[in-house]
Amino acid sequence: MPQPDMRPFFDTAACGGDRAYFDARAEKWYAHSEVTELTHSLASHLVFPRKALIFCFCRNGVESVLAYLACLEAGHAVLLLDPNLEEQFVASLVALYSPDFLLDPVHCDPDAFGIVEKCGVKIRRALHPHDHNLHPDLAVLLSTSGSTGSPKLVRLSAENIAANAKSIAEAIHILPDELAISSLPLHYSYGLSVINSHLHAGAAVVLTGEAVTSSEFWKTARTNQCTSFAGVPYMYQVLTRLKLDSLNVPSIKTMTQAGGKLGNDAVSTFHRIMSARNGRFIVMYGQTEATARICVLPHESLPEKLGSCGTPIPGGNLAVEIDGEFVTEPRITGELVYRGPNVMMGYATTSADLSLGDTQGGRLKTGDIGYLDEDGFAFISGRAKRFSKLFGHRINLDEVEMLLRSYGPTAIVGGEDRLLIFCEYGDAAEFQVYQRDLAARLNLHPRAFDFRRIEKLPLTASGKPDYPTLAVAV
Amino acid sequence: MTTQEKLISAFAAGLGVPASSEITKFEYRRIPQWDSMAHMQLVLEIETAFDIMLETDEVLDLSSFSKAAEIISRHGCCMADAAA
Image (cartoon, rainbow over all chains, first blue to last red; front, side, top):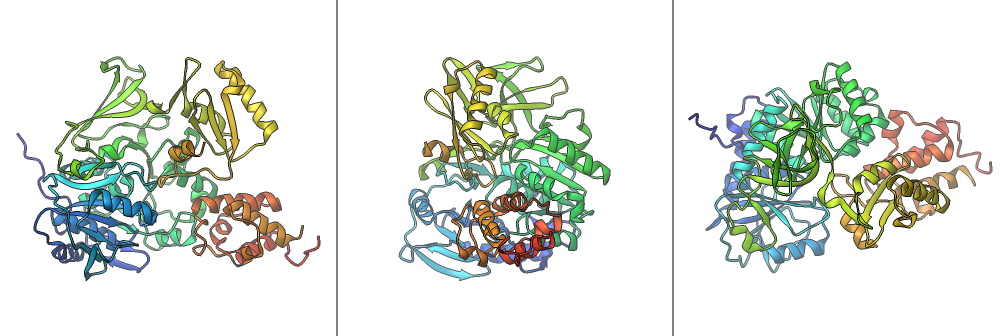
């Protein structure tokens, strides 16, 4: 049997190119050898009598990448967090999980944590550490909801991270001369996967906290001749308005999209633009529960497979299940179930859960509803949990949302006997028209559709509607 | 409504903040509400209020209230013709 590649994917010394990261804020390049050295030095400050639990607050700079890599090198478990989280929520997370170290925290209780060392990264060490018994395989923890702040965490092993990094690098052909630009944060699984997959490939990443709406972002991309861009749907909506070709970054030959479904029109547009510049537009699909990536749709599969999110990454398998039974025929809709080495160890909701081993067995019920076509390409129509039952009818909230999106930003949550439809547009008279239209289309009473005008839809870190917040607002 | 008032209300609507003369001092990065999503909404509000279409460079350069005033004056909506 062939031996798997056992080189730790975070062993930057083994990487080919001499450039690893460009920190846009500091305007400084870091070579792979330098990253290895700095990581090693930082890890030496994280020595602990046992495997430690570390909370790392991530910024889009090289310090956060070093902090993350140092935690891995030291063999600890690290929870990557949004630095913009509410102080109270961070305090409740600290109380719930009892971390041994905080890296770059915004707020910190001086009675509970002492300052160890400054090394570009502020290290706070617990004065009275909790008696943790962390599972030896546990390496990375991510929040299930990005920045909205759920205490429910996804438990990932170093093997999960390494396997997904390798699969992604293979699936989208990341070569050592690739230079990616991403403003996706490290605490978001997509942002982390950009770092991991490029590290695996020995390629480089430009780290910037600038938004795609700022001229600095594009100036950085232009000056450094970035070759690839990673974005979530809303960033592509921004790019549609900005017009990619007007941004004068012809060096960008690869664009990847994940973090939710981008409309077919936008996919076609970007596929056309990238084809014209001899580049690639790659639609992807994944979940934090699968470390990040599950499927990739190669550029060449468009326009033929428009609407698909692709085929499973190397090493993975995707199947459709209905009521626990595998569906073998194509184009039958059910729940997508993924198997692969990147499936998480499981969830954690308490600190005791951190001592658990793998509870998934490499199998993940995605909660996404869809089908596979004859060629094995996945088409997703919605979320299993985004269904509402109204008067005995099963309503797919995402589909109703898609019907209304052409009018403006819309988010729908299911109520007791009606759908609560939050719109950033419209008035009472218009809502009455939409109500009647939906009632006719879905064969329901108009009163089942409760329209509410909202100034601004709350969004998650990935730019998706924040449904839990909306549900609470009702 | 004067051009300045119109621009203030476009900022208020775009960034989701109350309309006030404070807005004339607004700069991107200093206003927490001014994120990339709010930015695109602001662009839309300005385009609608003044019936203009901003170029890519203008969308990216729109980094403060005074920049916005500069941009709309380039489109012929002068801040001086206040009483219009």
